[in-house]
Length: 324
Image (cartoon, rainbow, N blue to C red):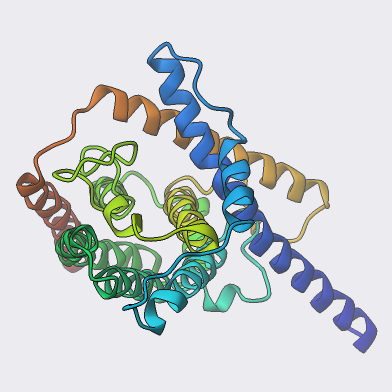
């Protein structure tokens, strides 16, 4: 391959990588809007438009952020740091192409670490505000995270034993070629779904549509934010939801993802397939939240304990089957 052809290939890979980075942040508010629209229609209400989150973000970005006089620099820097960490983590998950320029950095452990960093900064900033609601939300968020992260690590162990790596591009390629029906993979999927509900504070963990003192987790940490700071936090929350949907789709439903050289039309098909997966996830989540009641806060550890045991059993089954 000549130097010019190699340069063209690198520029093409860089362009695709930048497209994915911009794509995930562009569709994130739409995913939140579609879920709200679907839940409203299931309740026989008109509901807001799918584009309403975009309008809310534009309105918030145009407003000045109001910050308390007793807060430190952490409160001002946390919204941008949380958004940046979540955006990077979401951009590393393969959506329509596995052979991007930075695919080597799309490691599942790195994504878990970035999410942990964003969670720590958000909880620390909520405590820094010095309000009762911020402290309540931060303590609940840390409690849920302390139970969800071990379950997530067990899911990582299970999937890495199946694929032989923690790199998502290779993992998607292995899953796309077919690994057969395995009980351990089904356990990992169910565990990851529970962790995703907990990390995004969705029903049955929390109801993001309410602002009740006794129930809210994520929303309690956002009550002291306004203007562009609130816009960054809201966009980061939408990106985190897209991240988990993309993660589940990449690993357990990798159909449509381009894994080898082919016509340019394959990329268009892959993008359409990814959008279809996002739409299907929104519909399923809306139906699930309408059919499920929010559980008491002190019952959340029981649910996350189930996710941890499912991940652990999946890992043990793979060890036993490998030894046999």
